[in-house]
Length: 257
Image (cartoon, rainbow, N blue to C red; front, side, top):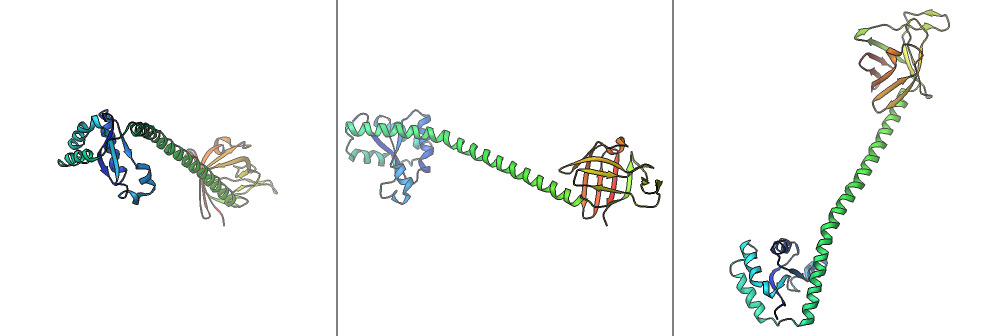
């Protein structure tokens, strides 16, 4: 029959005929794969079912054989083998042709569906992975901030070095009990749980302000005096009992005994 389908290629696995399908499609040759779904589900049935058969319309048989041969899918003698095979097969009746045409259409739709579904699955997977990694990253940052804050709280961080505008200076807070300046005691910094930071003064009472830790940054605000020295964003480094707070103008090094 003129529009019956004939076999032009037989392979064991579906991936072996995928490129051939693309090649024939690009040459406007209608084709479909016989028994692909069954073999994909039960691969070891492939040989028993005669392999995966790539079929085309009988009118397209010769051009298909030539196209596949030109691109190395068939050996020179394979075309004649397939011609003899089809010569001995009984031609399909009209009902069989309609069924196979329907299968061809469905398979074409299935391939189009696969073209869209795989990118959608990949994009969805990447999106979920991104959300999860972002969540874990934020969770880790929050954990690190909490641990850093806990390490700083209610410890007397005694100052070893205080530099402002590249010059080393010596803080000297007034002793609150005697109202006298002490030049011999160690100046210190204290962080409280109420987000209050206590800083050394300069022939004044100790300075109080608010603090906020964000990653490795320390934001100090609302200090009552010496705003030019203490207010702003600082890089904070803590290694064991060594503390360093610094920005462009102010650098403080302290330790906890």
